[in-house]
Structure formats: C-alpha cells, structure tokens
Amino acid sequence: MQKKSHFRSWKTALSALFACFLAVFCARAEEMRTIEGQVFIRTKGAETIKLSLVDVMIFDEKLVSEHLDKKRTQAKPFEDYLRPIEKAACDAFQKAESSANSAQSNLFRDTSNNILLGAFWVRENQAKIAKERWDELRRMFVFLHSSFFLFQGLPDPLQTTKTDADGKFTFKVPNGSYVFVAKSSRNAGADIIGGRSFPKTEFYKWLVRVKVAADMKVMLANDNLSSSGSVDSLISTEDSEELVRYEGFNIDAVAAFVENDNRVRVAVENAKQEAARQAQIAWTAKVEMARKAKIEDEREAQLQIFWKNPKAAQQKAIELFPDVGMAGSLLNKEFVVRVKRYQTEKKEFFAEPDWPVRLAKECSEALAAKPEAK
Image 1: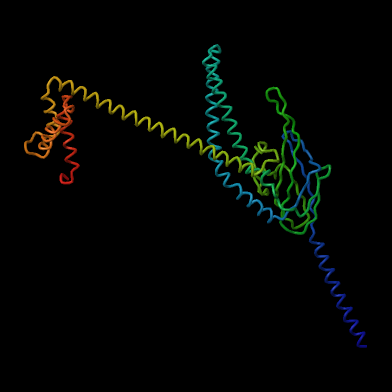
Image 2 (image 1 turned 45 degrees about the vertical axis):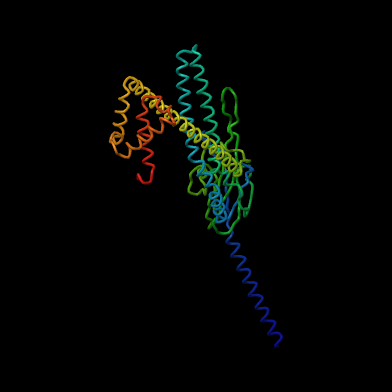
C-alpha cells in the first residue's frame, strides 16, 4: 500500500509538472505575434511599385539605438570640421558662378572681343573649380548623415526574410519593441544632360520602429522612408543621398579626406601668413627708406643754406640744443672739448657746414649716456 501511495504521489507530481510546462508553452505560443508586411513605393505619377526580393530584417530596438548613437558620435568631429568649410565652398561657388554669368553677358554684347572672351573662360574655369570643391565637401558631409553610413555595421538581426513578387513579407515575433530594416533601389529612367543619357537610380531605405503587442500589418512605403521625416523612422536622411550612392564609401575615406584637406589648408594658411609677413617686412623697409630719403633731402636743403651762411648752422645748433650756447654749461664744455680734439684727430668732421648741428647732437647723446649725467 505504501508503494502504491508513493507511485500515486509521483504520478500526481509529474502530471502537475506536465500541466505547468503545457501552460507555459501555450502562453508562449499565444505571445508569438504574426507581422504581415509589404514593401512598395508610390511614384509621383501615382503608380504603385511593389518591391520584390528585398531583404527585410527585424532587430531589437535597443541594439539599433545604441548602434546609431555610436555612429553619430563617430561622425561628429568630421561634421564639425566640414560644416563651416562646406558653407564657405558653397558661397565661393555662388560668387564664382555669378562672376562667370556676368562675364558671359559682357561677351554676348561683343563676341569678337578677345579680352572679354578670355575673361569669360577664366571666370568659367574658376566657377568649375569652385563647383568641384563644393561637390566634394558636400559628398563628405551628406555621407555622414546618410543611410549608407548609418546602416554600416548594424548588429545581427533577430530574423531576416525576403519579399515575394508582391513585395510582401511575414514575421512571427513575441511582444516587444523592434526595428524593421530594409533597403532597395530601382531604375527610374534617365536624365538627359548635354545630349547624353545618364541612368537615374532611386534608393529606398527604411529603419522603422514598431511596437508589437498583437498581430499587425507593417507597410514600408514612402511615408516612413528614412528621408520622409517620419516619427517612426529612427534616422532622418536627405534627398541628396545620390551624392554618395556608391556603397564603397566609408568613414575611413572621410577621415583621410579631412586629414589631407586640413593639412593642405594649414599649409595654404601658413603660406598666406608668410606672404603677409614678407609683405609687411617689405612695406616697413620701404617706409624706412622713405624716411631716410626725407631726412637726406632735409639735410641737403639745410646744407645749401649753411653753405651760404655758415653762422646759420651755429644758430640751428643752439635752437635745437640751447645749452650749447650757454658758456660754462656741461653741453657747452663738452662741445668745446670735442671741437679742439676733432681739429687734431678728425679734421674731416668739419668738411660739411652743418657740423655744429651734428656735434651738438653728438655731445648731447654722449652726456645723456653718462651715469653722472642721469
């Protein structure tokens, strides 16, 4: 009887455990939600294009948010560098283009004028160079905000599927917060430029947040594209993504460009500063030469006066240095001493009639340099 009692107890326990597992299994099965979706584009001509064979991926929202934060942090120093110089390049191009248009208008008034023709070609070439510079900087800046950059390095998806011929897809997931990611493109005709045909490709990118709490439908269409500005899109890109449409573009290319561009800009700036320094030196030398020339001209004019009237030189010396005319003053004594010494040692000092002025100045400077005179 005791063995049968133990057997019944174990049987009851196993039954209860099985019932528990069954309840959990059923509960989990009930938590799985069916997501039916479709990927399509509505053209400007009101035509609906269903996009087939598109890889649709579903991600954990938290992991995608962390990925995007890292990408934006990585891009910020390059954005800070590129933003002001991209704007400056745009302004430079617009100015060069306006100048080229003005030169073209002048040329139309007189097409036989070779000077106007040459001016037009110079302005046209300057505008072309400015446009190339601006385009290059725009490509770099746009790339840092583009889906091409933000999609690179996404974490592993929870699930991946492919759209059918009608652009439809299906997922089964438990309740939660997810991100649906897809990208596609299509040939949208061609642009005719200069008589040549250039294929026009439209790119479509989706990175859409979806809260799953029941079976639902998810449409990846125009209104939640990355460039649509939708609140459901985790990224907001520009329509100008075609500037960086080649997938091989990466952050290393931007870093290399910025490093090289900065090195060139620093070299150019240093060259400008050196040119300005040399110009300042030349200007200072020119001013100094002009100053000396003026002094020489004034001295020459005075010499002419002193040649005619030697006493005028003595009067000028007393006018500039009054103490030299005061008998017994330090300056007068120094003047007399030097006159006597120079008559013996430096007779050539008296060759020019302005010697009283020069000697009075020399004596004044000599006395000022003596410690006892101070």
